[in-house]
Length: 566
Image (tube, rainbow, N blue to C red; front, side, top):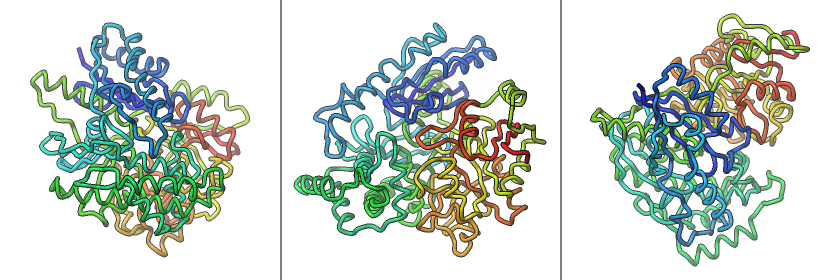
């Protein structure tokens, strides 16, 4: 008999579920939004019946005596703990709505699992501290065995920041920031002022737009005094200043309902103020932790523009950000903590595994589905590739074709890392505009990611460092960047994905073949979706994007489907 531990992310948004086996290995992790094709999946239960049923059927087919333990990513419902909510950045109406969704998920998560598995599931649900779940998730993929682990998000049980240390296989909390000060809420407020929606998770639009603007020093000064950082903890700044500054921005600086490019300077100012706060936190943390290694998680860890500056602007020498640092990743954290609890109670070594770089943890297309497409290709041209298709894809990319890729298990996290990606040639000056206009259907300024073998990064980027999950934005070298204009952002940066044979073997092969053909070992990579929709989940999702967009081809498994005979 084997034991499995099912982690559920129960924040009210970004629900996800993950499964850890009795060896402490994550065997599946997937965000619910992809299954539902509903961005962020607000209010949806993380254990959607039709999502989880086939997963458990496969486990039971291999292990008929399997037993399961459910764990959630919060200790309690927020409605039971919130007292006098602070609505300076987020309105009390939104806070109440979010808390009600969290309460629903926290109380009812697991009911569909009980329905599917019956008495195979432990009657009790284990509930873990929210920031501890962030830490466990991040440590699992960390490449070092000791580090300061900093969590920065919108809100945890009692605050929006925590410091843990990770050493000798143990996670130890050093402090948590009590009170309402929150970098996540601060950035969400600025997202709304720029005319975007924090509820839709459009903070990343602010990061992209910031490259087109220049920080207004008066705005930066005002914004950087709203909060105070003391020993790494976040507090409100001067109350009278707060009462003056927030109305000033709401009335005089807001770009709501205006053309988004007009907000570029505000976006740049927001990014500058966020960076100043985060740098202060990390400077304090370095002194307290006495480690040169940093693990960063929580929703704020998705700020790749800041992440790329950490080594230059703080004392830390190495930085790790997991592939899913926000609340969807907490499904993994909860499952790992449940495994640790059960393992410890049985008297065995319960150190959470680390250096587990595998990120392809989601669902995958099955052979029968792919064969059906081949048999019913209709007006499209279908053929199976030789081998894994890497050479054929590289050849088509070198010819300027734009290709959607759905192969193997899906990546876990918000970014496509080669298995649910749209790939293109970065050498074309027109490629960025073309993909934004005829495939993604999104704002013209939005950037695309360069993917590059790790050993080549120093040839193309200033201050190179590993970035296997697109977590770091780095400065391009000049004039090298002129060869790849489609993946160079307005400020001369790129949010790169570095490739190794261990972390992304197939995509590395494609990139190397493309380099042999063109002399440029870099590809353009963006998520396989259209604007407003999550990354594709099913074969039908992939076919829908292919048929209704400007994609030239789609690779599903090893089946290559094209609109013209190529």
